[in-house]
Image 1 (cartoon, rainbow, N blue to C red):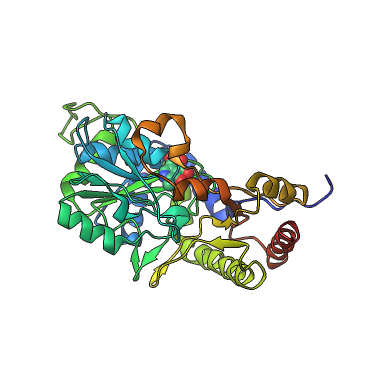
Image 2: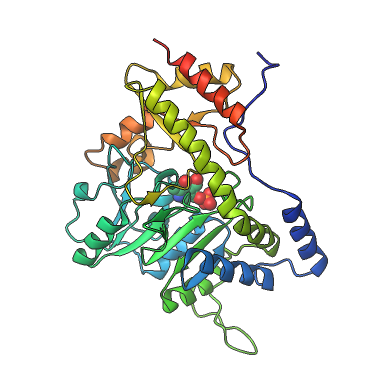
Length: 368
Ligand SMILES: Cc1ncc(COP(=O)(O)O)c(C=O)c1O
């Protein structure tokens, strides 16, 4: 089987423009995260998503940490995190000493199920846009207003995703994005925090840069800060990627439409995909499928691998991970999604022929 052409799970769309932009920064001699290039990326990113302020960070996890710090999350804070997510979401409040309440997800969208929140008065809600599928931010926002809670949107995968034409990541007090190697906007590693609150932006900027003040001629150090900055080399790449986002997103949407049609026509009753709510547009960072209980996820993955198809699991159920056991109660949907889900190859340059090969292989593996 080694001569079978491999179709990877994901592939960044990097071209000459990114290489040229990186070269220009190298030649400028200003490579740090404090240089103009990073500031320009912040400005352009904020404008793209429609936020007032943006703070570039070393990754989304550090953006989430800064968001928690800026909102004053501490030991006694009640922070709500969905169970079906990458551990970084729960780790951010834990870095601040909080013990998050991990809540089950909705069986259709795989996003936070507000009706399952037990804490009567949460301080912070951390909805995740799972694989770029926007969470129901209208419902979550209304709930947050009623309970006077802040919202930190984990928009790691939601670049770009929309809820009634507004960018996912801009509904909460703070939104955090990831530019990791297999995210839609890729700088290898990287992240961005966005907010409309000037005070939060200033605090996040300071905490991101050793806790410096902006005083002249020298900064002062008045709080414990971090070095969570994004370098100018990464920012240069990010600026080019940002310009390509609409076109790259269009290609993902086209592949998702092909997969959707296939799932409805050929795999009906065998698998289900994430429901995208009306008026919502997913970023499709991943295209994931939940297999019926008659299938064993790992067998399906290994059969697909034998056919050269680079599939993997969806993401993690925190209630199945030892570190979070004490924070979980009554989680069932997330567990099922974790044990039954697979991600199919999804990237802008996936050809129609290769997508067809993925679908043919899947139909064969799931044949009963
Ligand atoms: C939902 C979610 N949140 C946070 C992260 C962490 O992002 P980063 O790798 O940029 O720290 C990821 C990474 O995959 C993620 O999927």
